[in-house]
Length: 217
Image 1 (cartoon, rainbow, N blue to C red):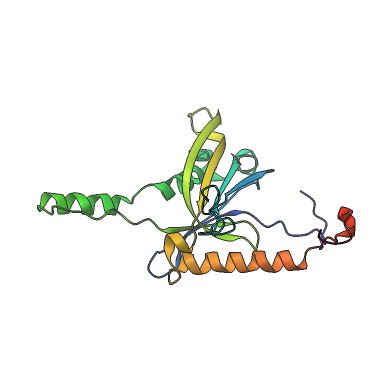
Image 2 (cartoon, rainbow, N blue to C red; image 1 turned 180 degrees about the horizontal axis):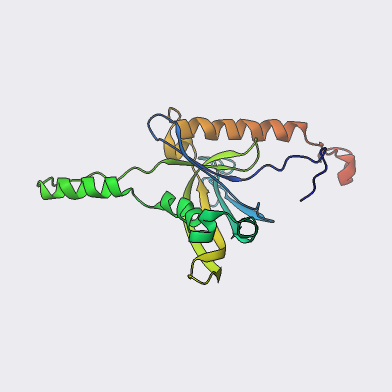
């Protein structure tokens, strides 16, 4: 790592968990190393017209379904060299646990549901998870649902604590169709969409002459 004082500060990508009611952050997970690649897929939500149905040919029924996939690496080498006591004792278990608990109900929720079932409650509502935000720069703060999660532990210390691992994450962006306009996540999606529209306007616009056209036929 360079010590040049003028070097730019590297922003981290990561995930922020918000309380679904108050919108207050309850956990922040910054990726140790930013992935080299991030893949996004947008599935267009058009109204599939029947042949000859001219009224529906250009209509969109909702925002596209956007999915994001990335591979994040976690490595304890630097911390082991500096003598970090937590890493020396547990390896990268704490970092992995911080990611894994995002897809678990809390032990309190499970115990609460168990108590209700023992009291004869016939219908128990599904447990609500915190709202997850995928943060990838200041212009991409997206409400997401984790859809895929896999961990490959690649190296271990003498006590079998993992010291290097690769985490593969798949996420689906949640829109106002999923959350509504009044929900904190819905507000964040609208801010993301409006930011995208602004970026599209400041981008370089093409010309018809660049396409070899003098006008639209």
